[in-house]
Image 1 (cartoon, rainbow, N blue to C red):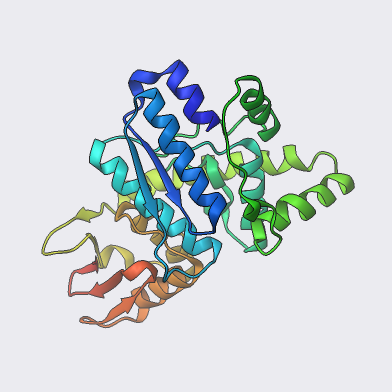
Image 2: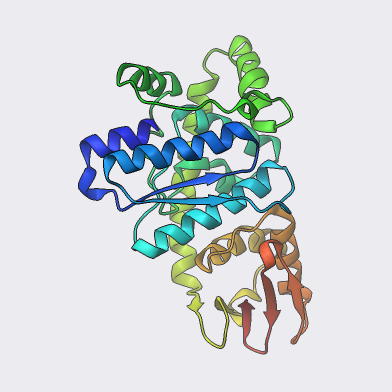
Length: 277
């Protein structure tokens, strides 16, 4: 809501539409969607709403995937970029979560990674955004699920990060510095992969294809950092399991073989290509 208020005030001509998603967590989530719709209407901005399907498990990863699918669909309608209100605190939490999950440099970049998403508040502490919202009298809804320790991000926010700060007061600066270095490495590495392994988009019902011969020279560890870049060019986000499966499939998969990835995506091996579909 703070981002909406600020954007409508500062750059109203650049706001194509507002998109809001109900994760199905209860009355507070529904009130949040209703508030966004009313405020967008008051500001004269088109509002699109989405809702998580009842079949989606009540887990952070599934909610996130459904939300981003919806946001990308809306952005595609307008040929516009997605802008989110992620703050400096969100980046800190993301980096800690990635560390807990043993992410490599690509993952440790977190919200600093250049993914095409606009994050104008990522350098701003959450407390400053809250102060702006109070001073500007921005209406909002507080969802109680944000304080539930059933979710990892909340445990990181409420318990782990405060404990780390008590033990090491410079931890915020150190984590953000590491994330910035990781983001710089990621950008350089992605430029190299794009140059060496161009992805062929579309064709015969495929999302994208990658030349098989170009990848045959790499070992599993190298493939594990190359494949996430190639998959991202096809619009596919790989988890750790999918990355490992693709690396193994590259070195041991047979022509005609197919493996399944999360999100309903599969990769087939043809004589000359790895094909995402």
